[in-house]
Structures are given as structure tokens and as C-alpha cells.
Length: 415
Image 1: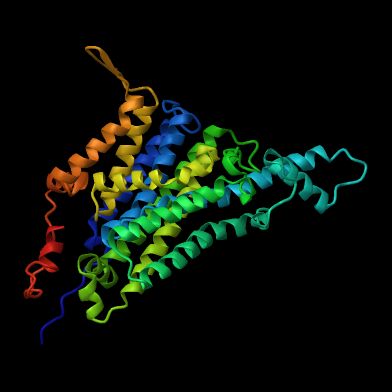
Image 2 (image 1 turned 60 degrees about the vertical axis):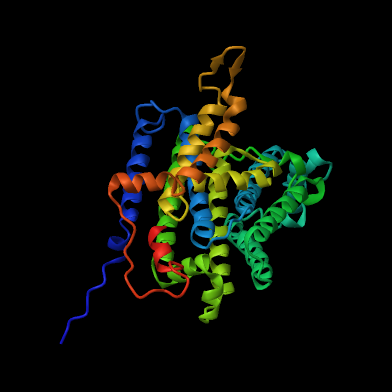
């Protein structure tokens, strides 16, 4: 009797998980030990915040790679979910902080303020800038942190589910689906720009770096705490995404990417698989936004304009589409370079009759890099890492997949 082969554990079948988690842990510990709050102070607080925000962008890039790299949908609306997560956590941050300020100002009154008077004072403080004194219905749960945290994942997830269900059941694919996601993002941004949207219009939400209840904690320690939270979220999301795409579910998702018609012919509910991945990616992206904007301190509708989602796609393409660690590499490398170039720290290049100022030319350089990677290194930076590490594409022996030579197994083996 022949023994059945023992299936390798999930972690051993995905060595990139251990590598990513190890690098993430070493990075987090090193930044902590070099920070002003818990270490030598070599890394200033502003840099710690930049690094924490970079981890959040890497988290959004992992979600983007799930949708684009594995499912084959170029979503140009991912940053809409990112901004929604920021707005929803920003509601609680502004409300709780303003409530404490209003309560302190009314504490000297002979008669303690009623809850209605307290809420009216909060509404005046928050929405006076847009000429309103009423608390909009969308702020009904802003007083409760647990409810707002639930909404952080529920609202973007519901939006993605409704949008995906309408688009996928109509068999919208390719560039038309990308245009639809971009239109959704633009419509949401234009609505948020209006003063009567309930989110303070163009002013957005500000002062988010001041965490209610932690007034005695300085920004140096808060920045490190958010760095820890961002690293933890990135590690957990990476494990979840790797588990999702490594099993049978992931095989079906990649098959949909390669030949959706054939998968549908085989009897798989293609729309259901698309909807699960699209909704999950939206929820992960929203969590990234909820961690990002308390570190940034402010959010306004400009943050979710379609160009932001295009940047996210560029990061994933440069890092290596279809490789989760490639998405992280692309987001980290490009976002840190962007901070360096646009922050005025990059030296200008003096040419005869003209000076190249990187603040003005960085986006041009990024666009050229995207074109070069697409033409000459379609596997991105991750492909270079694979070659240096001796990682070869997986061998998938088997019978020919059909009359279309290389349609499934062979193309996937080269991906």
C-alpha cells in the first residue's frame, strides 16, 4: 500500500511569509530603538511618522495586488476606500477631542450642561467653519469608538460589495471596469467637496494626530505606537492574503485572471469569487487609511482623487504585480523616494541654461520609471529579487491545458 505524500505546512509552502515577517519585525525594532521616544533619538519623530505612513501605504498596495495582480482587475478606486477609512476614524477623533474641549469650557457653569447642550456645542465647533450648527446624520455614531471602528470596515466593504455586484453581474471587464472604478472615486470625491456632505467640504477633518484620552502622551511616543500598529496590520494582512491566494481559492482566482470565460464554462461562480476578493481588498485598504491619517493629522477630499489610485497602481507595477512582497517593495521604495524628492532634500541638477528641480520633476521621473519597468522588467523589482535569490517559477507539470497552447499552466508558471 502506497503512503500518501505529506502536504507541507502553509508557511513552508510560502517562504516569503517568514521573510516578510522577519524583515518587518527587524525594521520595527530598529526604528523603535533609534526613535526619540524609546531609543537613541537618531531617527526624529517626523521620520518615524513617515515610516509608519509608508507601512500603511504598503498595506494598501497588498490589497491592490490582490485585486489587480491575482484577480486581474485594474481598480482605480482603491484609494477611495483608503480615504473612507480615514474619514470614519477621523470622525471619532474630532468628535471626542472637541467634546472634551467643550465640556471643559462649560465646566464652570452653575448648572452642568445637558447631553443635548454638549452635542450642540460640539456641532458648533466642528461645523461652524462651513456655516452649520447641526450635527449631520452621518455623525450619529461618532461618539462611540467601537462603532466607528466597525464602520471603518463595514462602510467601505458595503460600498465595494454593492459596486462589485452591479459591475460583475453585468459582465463589465477590462478597461471599462477600470473606468467605472475611477468614476466611482471621482463621484465620491466631488460629493465630499460639498459643504453639505457632512464632512466639512474642502476643509476636511484636521487635528487627527491628537488622540483623545492620551493628552499626556507626546507625539514621539504616539508615532512609535502607530508604527507598531501599522507593522502589525501589514503582517497580519500579508499572512491573510498569502493564505487566500495559495490554496484552491487562489488557483480559481488566478484562473479567472487568465481566462474568465473558461472558468465560467467549468461551472465556477466567477462573480462570487470576484466579489469576495474585491470586497476583502476594500476592507484591508480602509484599515490602512484608518491607520494612516491619524499619523498624517489631516484628511480632505483631495486625498481620494483618481490620481491617488493611479499612483497606487504604479507602485504595485514597479514592485512586481502578482507578488505580494513585490507590492510592499514597490510601495515602500516609491513612497520613500517621493518623500525625499518632494521634500526638497534631493540635490538639484544644474544643466546649461536650466536647473532640474526634483520637486517639479519627480512625477515625470516616476512616469518614466513606470514605462521602463513595463517595457523591460514586467515582473518589477520583485523579479530582480527572485533572480538574486535564485527563486525559480513553480513547475506545474501536467497534460496540455487545451488547444490554446500555454493558456493556463504554462503561462502561470512563467508569471
